[in-house]
Length: 113
Length: 109
Image (tube, rainbow over all chains, first blue to last red; front, top):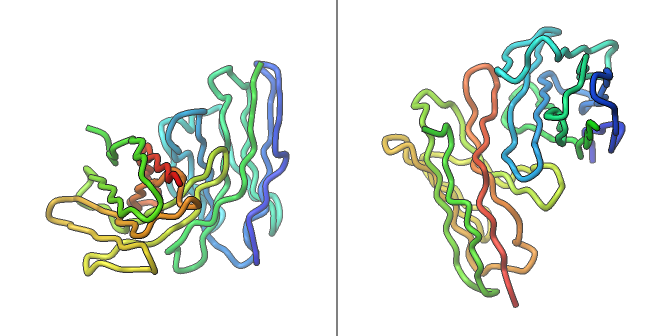
């Protein structure tokens, strides 16, 4: 069964460092998303991406964040200068042309120390 | 007002019980509605979409009331494996999924 894959599963980084979280969406999907979940809190929308551009972004997704689809398969989230409060589980998701279901990857646990 | 509001629970029920979860949403322009399930430290997984006409999938029944901006999930004959957090999710403009904080269900033998 096709699935969304994310790497790494866990990343520890020092405050102020840049991190890149990687995702390989399901191959024929057209819609891509990043969400995050701080431990014990709800899943929060960060950004949606369609047709090689951002279609919607949340207040959380400030200038420190960027997304890229560098080739036909990868979808990345970059955090330029990490803060302690960026520590969370980051989920990538993708949807097909009908966009009736978002398939989530298993997440990357980011710990900023 | 929270965009998607759920009773956090936990709901502690015995095996075989019927349990119902409710959810309200604030944006009347919301387009689609879902229930997701999330196991501890795992990714959310789609349980079912929710339609105004109501829909059923085995032991699970979902209902949407657009006028009241209210969504429900009914689980019949609860199993131990149903223990999880149930997330009420609304799709808004811009393909943005808005999640409720979730309702914890614990099914005990």
